[in-house]
Image (cartoon, rainbow, N blue to C red):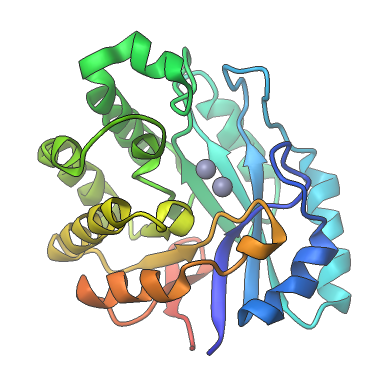
Length: 261
Ligand SMILES: [Zn+2]
Ligand SMILES: [Zn+2]
């Protein structure tokens, strides 16, 4: 089995400790033959642990590693987008040749969605605010390939699947944009040690397929070496149950191929 993991962090992200070289050494032990480093760019992140990447140096380091590594490496980036940072984020993306861009909703311009403060600020409106923020991101950011971890807030707040899936209209609106723009939806396996998360991801991916979505990417969201390629089997099973046959990989901004396995 050859796994393509399109969401891996290195110590270029402030919340990761893996060196790039160690990640590429670890990957074959997890059957990962291709990986994308997707370190964080969250301009103006509303928390002390802000993540901003020195992009030219970062890309240069990947170029050096591509020359020596036996693993196929993609130059990726994970952008956390908000109303305030979208123009600057897009300008940054325009300046560099990046193989794989993950669009993420980590925060709005007031709070980080992973913090307790998000729940205290928005209370029963949290899911509504969060999904509207995702809609803004997928419809306003010009350059990206996949939407990451749509289940993100459910990792940090006491939200049941029923509560989340009640926002069917919001979810469908997001999927319609992804489909219209030929973008992908990610199965992010960070939360997949819980059954609840597995059911939620299945419901979301299935709906994406029902509406005409074609492309689904696989991402472990590893921040430590031993998480590279994690829960791939579960992700594949969700993918198949949802009616898809293979994970996807971009060849250009809006052109895709299926991953070989
Ligand atoms: Zn993320
Ligand atoms: Zn990530």
